[in-house]
Image: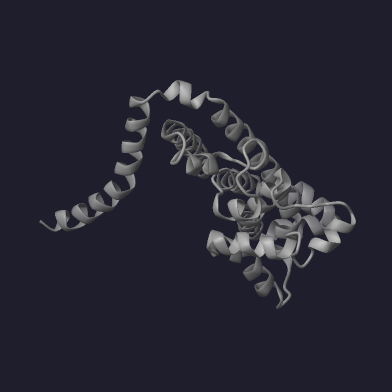
Length: 255
């Protein structure tokens, strides 16, 4: 009796998650899935999404790893405020993130005139897609990397200092190898989040086919033009996201 009190609400919540995804997959395969997935619009959106999300992940790793390390080692009282600022894009509504980017880097934004002086214009370009994805996805990597560096045992860092290691050697030869699994997991989550980014991108970069139209925006446009393409791209996103999450779980299980 008491067991069913736990099973019933658990099954209801699981059904809310599983049934829509199952319905989408079944409906997409009942349509002309292959031709829709291989259409010009779908392939352009897929290639653009893969390129921009990969660039975003590389930027997050290159720029975020040193930042996460400094935050993990810092004892400054300002660290809490910096961490708050970095974590804020994770919980911000996508429309707020896109509007903030547009106000900051738009042609008439705060920094728009300065960018114009050097001949740069971000809005409605592929670079704007990368910036929007970085804004919403890179904090996930920084957060994961920071936690990974914090969990490195203090005894190991002290032993490295006793052996004469400088800050760079400690970072490269001790911290990175020990926290490597967490860094990889953070990079995978960042890539997945960038791949599915929609709200900030459509406000800041627009929805230009072949230029800024990533898979989520092609799915959105598909509701009006071609539902089969939208469903095919949605299934591709589901499969890729599931595979990446499975890889992350596998890394977490390794001793």
